[in-house]
Image (cartoon, rainbow, N blue to C red; front, top):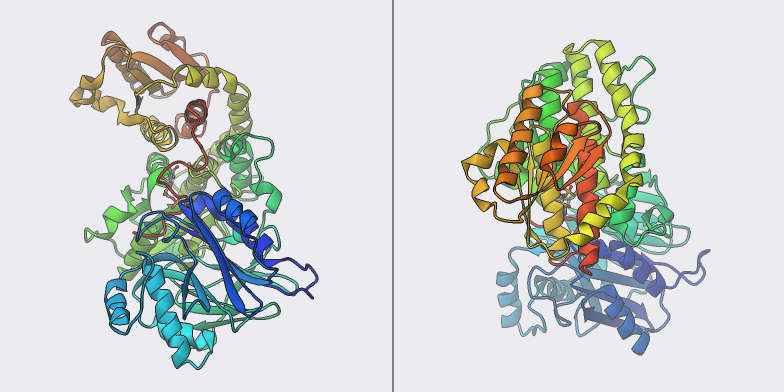
Length: 622
Ligand code: M6R
């Protein structure tokens, strides 16, 4: 959570960017990470100048308009998702220390802040906020004295006292043109410019200015000036980062004429799936997944796959279970990362851990991956964010190519993740000989047709939007699905909860009579995801029976069915047909109407669908 940006430039640099412009632009891009408050600090005229304000970035911009900042080329900026201390002006970052000469921003949680605070208070320190960050700032101020005014050395001394997760950025009035940062268990990426350097929670923090980026490792300190960057470990030993070029540009992170990022990202989905498939198989359907750094021989020995993920990414994992078990005959367990980590799970060197994370920074998933590695498991990451921590720490990575996902509610990353898990399943089936090459080729051909089928659904989105607007007053919506339709139902419910704040539950349709059917009352809206009638017949007929059962008890039945499935018409208030596709691939189509429904309903209620209350895009604290 929290978005962080740092800038060191100069009036003489080619670009001649002012720090405030860079910081505000970076914060605008990073606001999806947290939007409880925002603040900036710049170094100018031998002093620190800071502005901060509770609420969204626009509130900070209003404050700066009323009380302008002096021209500066060095600064730090922060957008917050509150952990210690509520969202208020005083708890907003930056926090000042050393008599106002030093400013600090922070992402993460400093677990031992209370003890440090007590010690500093006993030494005469006074605190203006309830945050752990102000404690770290005060500690850095104290170390600055011990380091004889060397801000980088002071940071090295300070971080030795800190436990937990943190990315810290600091500037000092005595060091114009210099920003120091430290990271442990929280994200930070370096951006390289021409006569200017940048720091960001992720590359979107500086994508308007450069696409040259450097991945930073765990427990590293980086100091930037306009012309230099120096990376060390916490003891000051030289360390290296890994440079990469960001494969998308600032325009990809714009709304492109759509009213919200979420809607734009829903409409990006044909490209997200197509790009994730691109270049990964030859004309004969032979797959080559070249970011897989695990020996093919080792992969053939795998006896179990455990998928670790949270939220929407975990539902992508649930879809993967059906496909990979069917194609590869390997048992697949899907577990929420935070549950896995704390229950002494049984994994060994024949276990393949597949973590799925859009951001690559979700702390619960990162910790679970680290734990599994310690137990000897092989780890593979399916991730959408180059330069992020989880792929960097995994033995192998399969990148999804969905492009930047800005809206807090995940949409295109979900479809790209499912696509990547299919590629993984087919690759394993190819290696292990579970499927004939011709079968793999046929499935890949079906996958290749998915983008145009998604486009067909998007072209008919008005039908779904109309339904959504008519249901803006609904207080509860249920979702039923079976087989791969079950995770689709769960995802449909999550989307509605997240952005429309409506009570929504997803159920396995077969579970209905074991309890949930008691919820059905007159007029209760129930979405039902119906499997293809061309697939296993029992599956289709059982779900059609479920529609009849809830309808008989007064439910308003809203059905997602396959083109040509007339059997559902008589029992549905509303039907949306998706193009024909093999059952295992169906989630790539059936999810889309549910995303459009949630987005439109939330918009009809007047909610900010991109930045829903209480949430942040990347959950970087446990
Ligand atoms: O970045 P990740 O994929 O690891 O994030 C996992 C979840 O936090 C995320 O999917 C969350 O559930 C989304 N807000 C869902 O829309």
